[in-house]
Length: 385
Length: 169
Image (cartoon, rainbow over all chains, first blue to last red; front, top):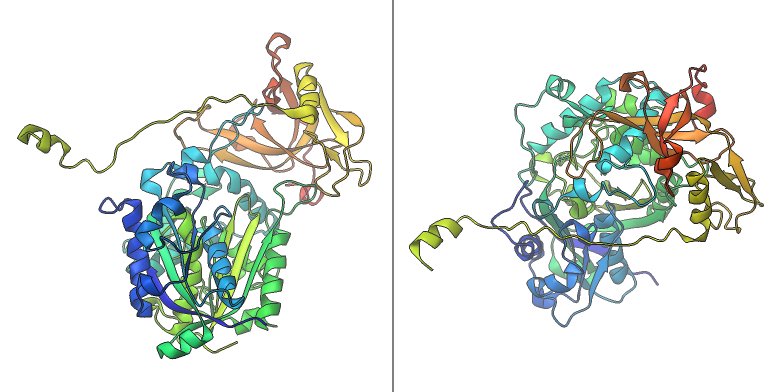
């Protein structure tokens, strides 16, 4: 029988363009120690470690989970590595959850990270493939055509992108861990920033960050014995689809909507627009907020941009999206999904600090990766499922 | 360590160490047939015998139904831009000078779009639905590569309505 799983400890680094003060080991350790401290635990009490990050060739360190095991007190313990491109932070947390819900382990440290300052993701994502023209131009080059299609097919006005970019940077000012701290941000600044991958503007894109996020996931008995406020896992879901097939909808991928449906079913949610108090969704380019809102059923088809336009997704709005500032304010790629999941957990524990959504009882964490192919989502709640 | 050396290395926290990898890519049986077509400046797709989708470049098996791919089909060199991006950003290792256009081109008679370059017009003239045709390199420069199509250029025909392309981006 499936066991309950709870988030007992949450930790993350202070994300920055370059954490020159920390090695890769130091970076993961900063997040792990903060999560352990939050849980009131030490490395000795951890049964297993589940780590995720984006491709090894970003930093050029192969199988880093082996190299980093020592820094995470994992020598002699089961160590697992998860890799699902940009969605990996979410998939990693889900795999760790399953180690608890299956009854295999009671205390699991899950962690995801990226040290972009020791890498060059733009270069790494722009290879010249054999037998092909040089059409790769980073993640923006890949996703801009689908942003264009969303705008064209929904008739969304161009200020929607500016508004999401502005909102997430305003939210980030309430999150001391967020990389971008731009108190001077205005909608005009976004509007007047250069167009990098037409139609995507510079300030509509995420930064390049060093950072890590970690959680301590525990069984029900451990959670109760701690006497601490925890976030209960109500449901998890992963879905994947191929990158190219006829009539594939890359604006609203089927894997994303199937993943959300499976998630809501498991979490017993029938009306996600009302029952979910807040969501942390993976938005590396501003236009992905309305796109994903439609894809996961938080907005009706063609209405995602209207939800943004109405202010519903701002802190204080009907359903705040990315109150932490989201990927648009911190993007340690491998960790970005984990940050979405742990921020959702913060919200339902009531420990989000200044960016707390008042009274949040159920929150959704979402991540995607590859060519909008890999999806990972969870729902956490203040009460037991 | 001398005082002079200490002064130099004090602030060194990272070192750039460029690496490189030489490799030989093999196209495999199915892609090779397509690439031989490219060398002859012909676009050779293949048809799935089960779902009748036409793939270009073709693969060994249909990604939709899993069947081994069927007959070859020579496709026309005309098609429609279903969506695109104007690349304005410079980056390390870039082969082309920005701005340039990368586009999904749905060849007439194909069921999947090719991602290729657009040329022969100002980048700001490119539109979703725009009709284009392949501009080939000279016969002597034709290679076993999609780069034998230099880029796609506008044909001047009327655009296809968005409703007809929205499933093919």
